[in-house]
Length: 88
Image (cartoon, rainbow, N blue to C red; front, top):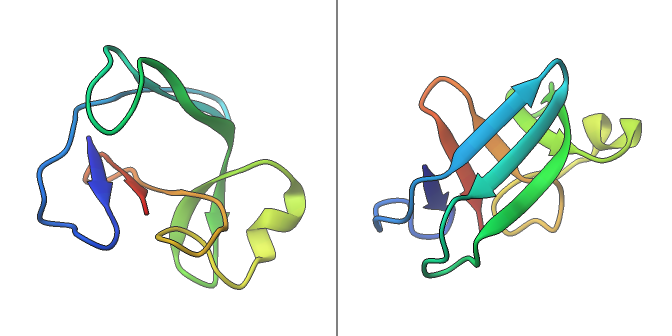
């Protein structure tokens, strides 16, 4: 499911996440507020050691960025254990 980093208790939408090796694709199966239907994010699933979180990276340097997730402008965070895709 989706959650907003700035408002984590606000209900949002259910998403489909496909993981094939390190490749991850986040899909909204049907148009609903706040996202259109289709692929929302796609990239490489990476462990971000500094924040101790999984991120959807685009290049190897994303692993060592200072800020990720939330409204940082960096890669989005995926909580695999609780099955949550976090955005701003």
